[in-house]
Image (cartoon, rainbow, N blue to C red):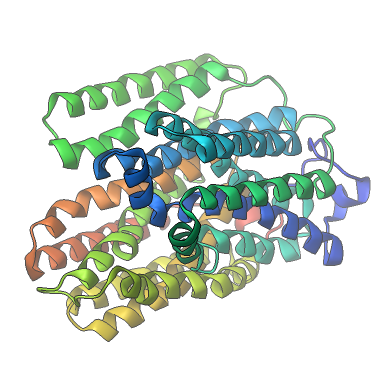
Length: 476
């Protein structure tokens, strides 16, 4: 596993040479878990509170949707920029900075009396998405190879929700105490996360890479990510030929070209272009994007809409739908993700990723063939807790660290994280028009589209070449 001797957070020579294991590793993982839970609560606990926020602030449903969308947009940008910046100034420092911004944004949300102020707070909260990437890098640099996969799986499991109950708790808090109580809980967990990071993550030493942060490249890539994310949302909503959509398309192309030109001239680029073109990198990013575009859309949109459709679906209430289709894969993922990391460390990360994609494709085909058989769909979605939340999500996050260029260890985790966010939005945008048509045919078409995209993801994964660190055993 890649453990640079000039790591910015070196605690002791023995930690650098052999890696942590046993109790010391468990303490570090537990502390990082508190930090990632602080982010995840901001991502999931707020969702049930959206109607209450709209009523309190006197805004419509379309306006309040920005409370979630801007949060994830900020996370897509922050994941790229902050994880790369940590190569130069240290993981611990950037993690504390990220938690500080998140806490500031949480306080803003707590006291906000208008939607614009609340949205500003949510943007600051969204930067905490970088905590996941920083945690993965810290684990790869600190832990012994034999425990890295399992530990990464434990952290990844939180990415699917805190046991599937965080959203439910958010709803209970909102009903009993009002939506501001949700932000109060997030603030408390955030403070605890700061204390844990201060206590367990080693202080910075020398930089992990030479050179200086490429802020011009970071700005161009950030603009590209913002434009493409908004484009994904605007296309299905306003039409792909609408002036605003075409403007976002032009902005995406121009900023992407600008980023490419900037990186060609930089001695310390944000992402080494030669590495970006290699089969060790680009197939992973594309596979991640396609997988999120397909499986995420099925679990979090198509099946949920179908389950609540009284005409051709199952006619469930929102709470029953969440209990049967959202909670099971999240709960199963809590156990499947650590086991998947353990398995990947022994069988090979790319191999296990492909196994997971094959299983996901088979399960999506089952759902597409039997969309009206309630318990078949329930069982298949539950099994996606193993295939998707376990095998695929764990290995995709792990490969984001293990496949990253040695001279830019923070580059690929952030870029891969952005593929997660963009893919999720793209997948829902692609199938939403078919679901909106109503009727069984619309749902079936949406499900087959998702299955087809999963097949493409499996195809790109076959082009992925593993670095030595991503082969069985996890050692470079």
